Image (cartoon, rainbow, N blue to C red; front, side, top):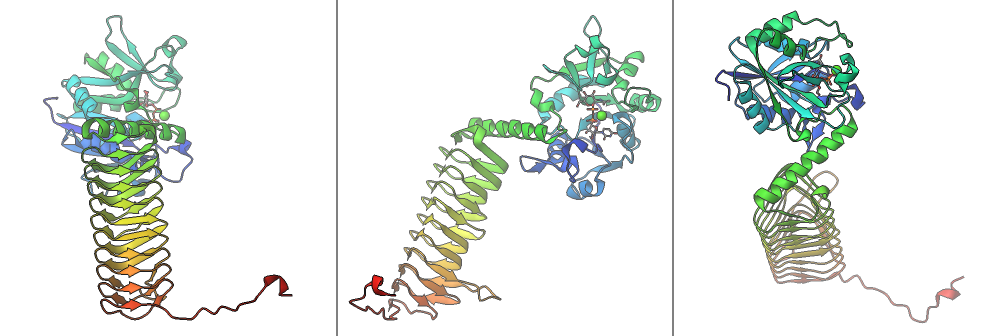
Length: 456
Ligand code: UD1
Ligand code: CA
């Protein structure tokens, strides 16, 4: 690393017209988080003295989204170019600092690369470059015969010969603050775009005798900028692939297909976990050992203990799931669901604020909300907790070893004692003491000798 203190300037003032969105470009998300958050995390990993964000378009929303971070904000009222943008932040940076310039719309940049770039600067200048098969639109890196970087020329100002160069400026560079101030003051906008180009500082530095150390970035995705939704989607896939590979290599996660796996948050897994195709993980999710997640499932903010199977097409949010449970297919576990060990929740079951005891089963077509179920409870198909009276929610408590017949309505508030059996089709409106058989005896009439074809 550089021996000088480091300040980081993140350029985030661009309008991002090509996104065709009302949302400021740097708040567009990659892996569920704003692009700017990714860049700020990479910046913070270098432990700089300060991080300055140059903002303009949608500034209030951008500032509000990062109000909890220790950042310095510099407003660029008019977008007059990258050099002008850096100049807005520079008054707050002391002369003896190195300045690392990053772009907020280049979200996959890594701390490893940034550290290498700061080291390469070695108290002079460094420039992160990349070779692209199609360099159209980028600033080209001009080198002398001996390979030294001499200048960056923007596409619109380049000659035909210069446009054939495929080594381009990534926009990421590291420069000493004191001469940078002078170079920025001396910039003029006499170029094809009428902008103050930060890149012109490279040729000025050379003229003043400062060496420019290039660092070649081997992974073009790290420096891929996002200007439109197609690039955003491409960067999303690249970012997702990077996360998937890290989970497989570092945590031993089994993935059916890393191309059909999306993580928008944090996932940590034990040994021998397997995630099938087309699974989405959001928020903070932890899996114990030997947890299998079936295809087309979403897990959001939940913790699943070892040996549990989540089958296909489940939607699980804000839930705690014990050891050896089986959930799904087609189960919806809403926030506040807690399944104790070996509980089973089957197809077309919805739970919410529901505590389900060990070895209990809710296997088909039920709604269980605001409820506590004891151990070894069996909930028959079509059982509904009627928890809402139109104004308030009420709780249902069901003791151990209760057997609930199919198509039972449990009208809360309600307490059902241990060992109760409720016959199919019962509407329970009153508490039931332990060890009671409860059957609704509304008689079904049978009228013999009736032929439907004789009705009219
Ligand atoms: C810039 C570089 C180019 C490089 C390319 C890499 C210059 C002059 N050119 O080109 O050499 O190959 O990046 O992607 O630097 N911004 C502001 N204020 C402004 C203008 C830009 O904050 O007035 C911000 C943008 O929000 C963006 C970044 O600076 O984050 C780069 O701006 P952009 O217009 O995308 O740069 P390019 O013209 O593509
Ligand atoms: Ca531009």
